[in-house]
Length: 351
Image (cartoon, rainbow, N blue to C red; front, side, top):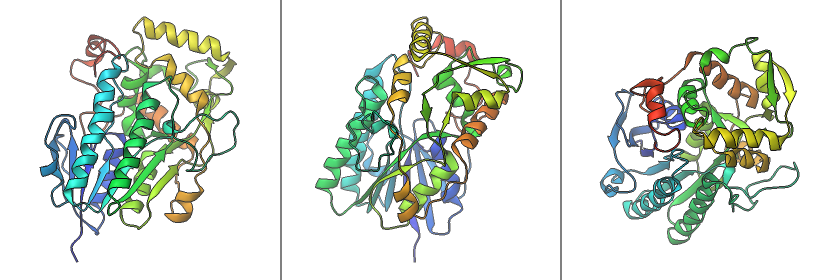
């Protein structure tokens, strides 16, 4: 029996590299086509890479003969240019879904997010039936929620395609630390400050807690969907939750409580001064995220998280100390030109 031929968009990112590695070692996989804007100099068994822009290029030839398509591609920056992120994330996803409908693929797996969920005022966990209207204050959540609606339309029009949507919590791993530092903290965060006992005190915003999942664990969930029969939505998060006090503990720093309003004002000032690429709306978002119930992914896919939320976050913190990176352009330790080039992009103005 022939193995499965799989196409993966966003194959060179945080989640994509973990999934590619996992699929390359699976005897049930015949081949993997990694689709990314920039082709990496990375050689993986059974895997080839192609450069493509989801918003402009003809996607049909890339999906020809593929039994399954995994859609991971997502643009986090430039947060100062929401037109660009909307064009890539929403219109690019629509073009891909249209191409999948014409390709003859039997399975589509889309990477959504906890950010697609509507806010909840208490801390009771929500299952996959909770509304996915996002939160209108942040471009990320607006786009994730809109793509959920596009996927609803796709499912209704293409019942012959088994469709699943994964809704992960924040995704961390050591080799994505350099990329995530560039995306969220910017060029002014020196890795030497992310060392135990070097920082005596750290401001923490109490009440801001979130779930996290290790990228390798999330990749296992994607693989389970690909080779199963389940469809629909799956919440994916590691055991427990984490917060800024956990970060302080990892650094051996004394936590100093900081009101949410003060933390937001400080982030907004840094954003306006182009010192950080992450806008204050992302802090608003974290405060509003619901807690996800992960019973379905564990029950129906047999998924197990091998890392707690603190362990996944801890890998990211450890990676920051050394500027850890991966073998692909998004995950590289430094971009060409180093941190000066990061400033040249406007710190959130251009990708």
